[in-house]
Structure formats: structure tokens, C-alpha cells
Image (cartoon, rainbow, N blue to C red; front, side, top):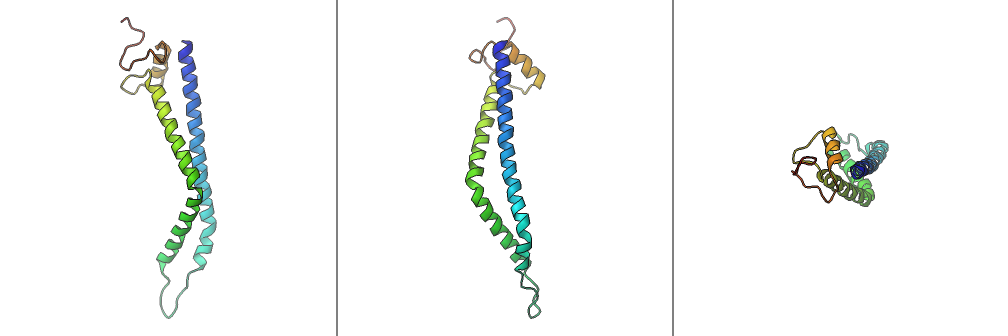
Length: 135
């Protein structure tokens, strides 16, 4: 029972670390959006207006917007890539820990906690084996 409660605590810590990593990625996205929002008025000023009866080119604004967005994103890309890799590793570790004692089907959270309490140890867990039942 002690090992299973430690495993639940470890799972809880791992899930919290994953949430923090996701918050960091979300914060970077918000920072990029904020910078782009402040640039929009400057991007709009460069339009030429009507010259000799020609209307302004609406695609020019989009081109400037996209190029600035690409430049700002490129500045943060190494950080985004590192956090994305970390998030993928955390997801894999969480799924591995959940799968140690969980059956093939996805149980409810209460079922998972009950099965983890019945599981003797991480090394002794076998998917599909009924824990707590006589062998």
C-alpha cells in the first residue's frame, strides 16, 4: 500500500510538472501575440493609399504581418522546441506510470487509484493481470 501511495504521489508531481511546462509554452504564445498586437498599427502605416486611382493592396499588410510573426517566432523557436520536447517526454513518462497497473481499457480515476493500491510493486505489475485476486 505504501508503494502505491508513493506512486500516486509521484504521478501527481509529474502531472503538475507537465502543467507547468504547458503554462510556459502558453506564456510564450501570449508574449508573441502581445508583441504582434503592438506591431499592427506600425504595419498598417506603410500602406501607400490611393495613387492614380489604384486601391491599396490588402495582401501587402498580410505579407508584412506574416513576415514579422515569423521573425518574432524564430527568436523564440529554440525555447519553444525545448519545451515541446520536454512536454513530450513528460507525457510519455506519465503514460508509462499510469500503464504499470492500469488494465487495457481506460479506467476512471477511482478505479486507477484502487488498482494502484492493490498492485504489489511497479516490477510486479502486469497489464491484464487481476491484482488482489487469487492466482
